[in-house]
Image 1 (cartoon, rainbow, N blue to C red):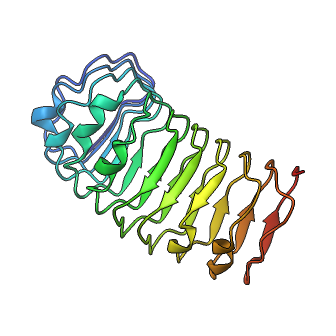
Image 2: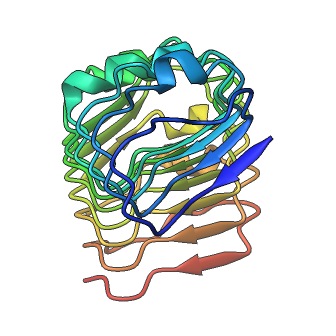
Image 3: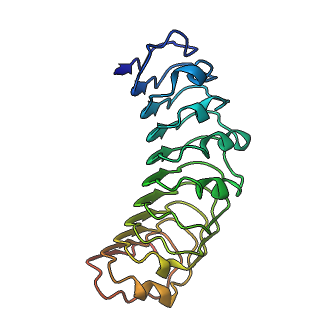
Length: 231
């Protein structure tokens, strides 16, 4: 059962039909989840993007959730703890909120089924992956304030990684992304590319626009390289 009620003036989740598996209420005025606590048991997809969310309390009751879209809200770091029990979650979009706490990454590590993470336009200053996200295929970290990206464990399924428009000057452990096919590091502060990049044997597309590079990496199977607007 599905309910789509986007682009209205809804302020709450009252009187929801029972046994919903798909719920889309984007572009409303919802600040609290409220009734989800009792009605979310069967939900697989939940879209609450472009609302006024300040609380995620009650989300943990949606134990079967596979897709959660909460971009363009007012969610703070203290609320992210409510997603850590969503063990079947495959797609998570937390873009355009008020997130910056590096402890988010420890919560992220509990989402063992996650395949796609959209984290654009938040305020993270570092990004350190320490726990294996064995199913992660796509990760977008554009327009944060990230200075350093560090991979301390293998991401064996990651195929797409975008870290555009940050302050990245150092990328450590990228060789652990053994399946990486597309990488976008444009609009950062990179002055050199480490030898690790040459170990990315599946990398086909690389963007390094708008950095401070004097030399370019040698990557064996690269098909497309954009190094425009460097020094």
